[in-house]
Each structure stands twice: as C-alpha cells, then as structure tokens.
Image (tube, rainbow, N blue to C red):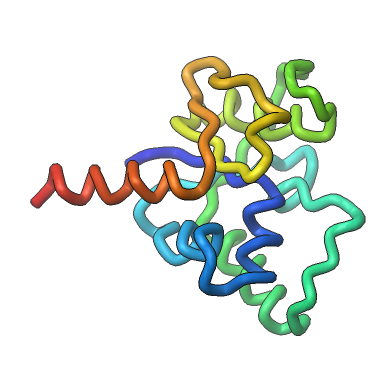
Length: 136
C-alpha cells in the first residue's frame, strides 16, 4: 500500500469543492496510508485557512483523517521548499518514508525528496487507478 502525505491545501480544497480532484483524493484515501506529523498538528493546518463549510463537516473530515492516518514524528529539519512553511511536509514524508506528497502548490516543492515524489491530486488519482488495473 502506498504512503501519502497530504498538503493542507488539498484538505482545504476538498472542503471548499466537494466534487473536485482534492475531494476525490479523500474519497479514495482508504486505498493508501496517510501520514500525519505530530510536530505540526493534524495535517499542518495553518492559520489563514478558513473553509466555508459547516463546523460539523470540518470536524468529521478531521476525525476521519485522525482515525485512518498513521502519525510520525520528524526528527530531521528540512530546508528545501521555496515556502518554508511547506518544509514540514517534506519532513513528514521523510519520517514516514512516503511514496508521495500530494499538493496543489508544486512550485513550492522540489520535484522529489528522499524517494518521495511530489504530485498534484490528478497524478495521485492516476497512480491509484493504475494500481487498481494491475490488480485486476
């Protein structure tokens, strides 16, 4: 099973647009292991993100992630993203030995990090579909 770190912007986008690609990532989340970093809190949620969804939907989404995800504690600081706030996702991926980081901000990240590929939601969905075809 693949291991994935999900950038906060994917979570926020999924809450804002329930039919978009980021939301589809969450619908298919049972097909991969999601890593969450202890150091930054659930999904590294930062101030400034204010999805226009009711509190119950947001709480249910966060509870679902909390219950399904595995928690890692990064030990090595990373300074590789053009936006330093995104380094936590590289740290989390490194600690989790993640296969992918899924983000809507590719420009902030290196192309890959320690064996982890950084991809947009569409690419992660393609990977999952390809894996499904291989198991048929």
